[in-house]
Length: 126
Image (cartoon, rainbow, N blue to C red):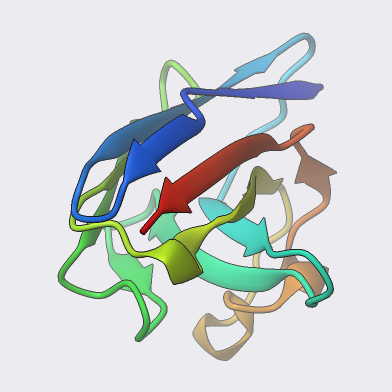
């Protein structure tokens, strides 16, 4: 299974970008698909996740109200619409898939995800 992320780029503060992630190859059933990001010199952090069962969405506090995650489980794709971008959103963004069931309290943890994409750079200039 491979996850391919696309849509990164450079945008001015206040602008928007849309990231997409698609699974290919021998795909397993996914319970959750999400996005993480890693800024230079910082640890990778949770951004957003969509739980296919029920379609529930969860966001990091830092992006709530500005980012929106959506997807199609039958097509194994997930998008991240990012609006009102800030310089502190600059990072490499990674999509991830969880093929194991995990409890809600763990979905913001990297350990819940077993398949990762290669990352796409998002740069927000001030």
